[in-house]
Structure formats: C-alpha cells, structure tokens
Length: 222
Image (cartoon, rainbow, N blue to C red; front, top):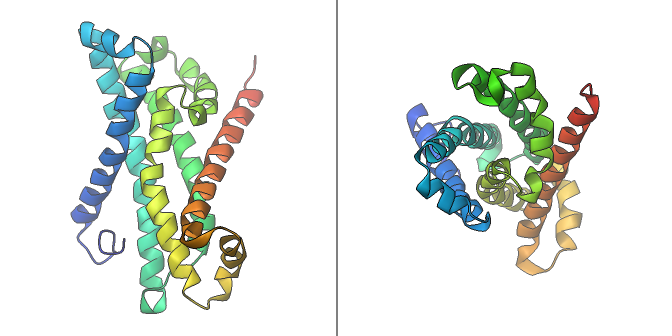
C-alpha cells in the first residue's frame, strides 16, 4: 500500500494512483447497478439525452465524490506511515478515517447538488430542492437503491485494502494505541480476522452515513 501512496512520491503520481483506484471501484459497480435496474440499460441505450445526463452525473458527481474520499483516506494513511518509526502506522487512522468519510460524502453531495442546480438546471434549478434531496438520497444509498449507492460502495474498493493494511501493521507492533484492535481480531476466525474487521468497519461507515442522512431529513422543515 505504501508503495502506491507515499508522501515521498510526486503529487501527480499520488493523484493518478488515487484516480485509478477510484475508477476501478466505480465503473464495475456502475455496470452492475445498470444491469440490476429493470429497463435502465435499455433506456440509456435507446435514449441519447438520458445517456448524456447519466454520464454527466457520473463525471460531475460520482467520480469527484469517490476520488475525494479515496484521496483523503490514502493521504491519512501515507501521513501516518511517514510519522511512525520503521514504517509503522497508528491505529488512530481508523478512528479519523471513518468520520472523515461520512462528512466528505455528505458535504460533497450537498455542494455538487447545489452547484448542479445552477450549472445544469438540475432539480428544476432550485437550490433548496437540490439540498432537500440529499438526505433522502443518501438514506437509501446503503441499500444500493440509487446511484449514490454505487458511489458509496465504490469507496469500499479503497477502504478494504486500506483498513486491512492498517490492521495488519498495527497487530505487528507493540503500540499501546493498537490494543483495542487485538481483542476483536483475535475473536475472528483464522487469517481472515483483519479482512472481516475491515468489512465491519466499512459497515459502521455505511450505518453512520444512513444515520446522518436520516437526521438531515428530520431537521428539514416540512
């Protein structure tokens, strides 16, 4: 992981690697989403404007969100490795990364929806309407019921290897800050402990995002 994302590499290399990982996670899930949505694929193929809007939505919303979330996570990892002796890593990165993912995911959706109302006339050109749909949209994303669910699970492609790498390296050190990881991993079966814990942590992120989205909906005036 540190070979692909290091503070020692040129900035453009870091950005390039993040973009490649983001695309690798995003586009296969987009194809899956289209395939699982009845009639959606045929609609896109037979309707040029619909396909253009779909592609624009992916390029202006999906890719920026996935890229930004991945970039922050990889940067936190690279920063932690650079600050630890002998290439270690602090378990605190997991406690920072999870809320950072939630905040970025929600804020970026809000900003992009708001701007899209101006640039593309989305949501009838109504800024308030654009912000109102953020909560309901994200509340269902964890269930893969809308395209934001694609963006959510596209970040799993980066989160899973990142979390596994952090957990593995923390378990190999005697750092007192890593103690809270050892007991849950020891309760999980065999060598799959770090992987299962990484999946569990991503599940926490998905649940937290759903909870924040639900809270946003409750706070909105009727």
